[in-house]
Length: 266
Image (cartoon, rainbow, N blue to C red; front, side, top):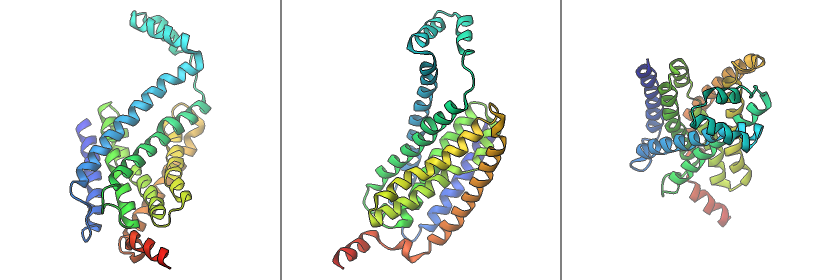
């Protein structure tokens, strides 16, 4: 089953990548872009996972205090399972803590890391020369990240979750939204667009992850989770349709550098 979920993840990702590269066939990205996307996705996933794990340790420390937390670690090292179990059972589900954790340790961290990855790739000349390039590159970075994230879910035994997530390429959607606003920033230089490039995908990601991940802990989230899934699917379909149209839009394909020069000379 792990192989099946991994296969589904790879197939969906390859289909999306091929679709994007097909739209870029007349002005392709520089060589080795696919390799860079995969390496960037792998590194992004490792970094975000490390931060998320650190957050898991930080939550009980904030709740019980460093001294209690250190004592629990000593009990674990000494093999005192009973004491460690008692410590872990002190923690009760807190919806506000889950809300903050979903924002800081998941959505914000992942979107910031993907943004930094995209910016590093965009530094190479002729990588982002128009607004559509920004959308395509950010979407590719999102796909690269999701490949390893979904494989991670499958490797930990979450086969059903891994398959369902593979069929819901939402990191692609987050990336496309990020690229849309980053492209606007590249063209007009407005800081507000740069903020939106990070903030909007983060907020959408936050709402989705918080409601879906915590649905078993908080029954009140059943309806919000269903709504968020449907809404995000609608946004994904909308972005796919728009990306196809943007790929043949002369304004989206216009060279950013040329337009900036013309504006300065006007």
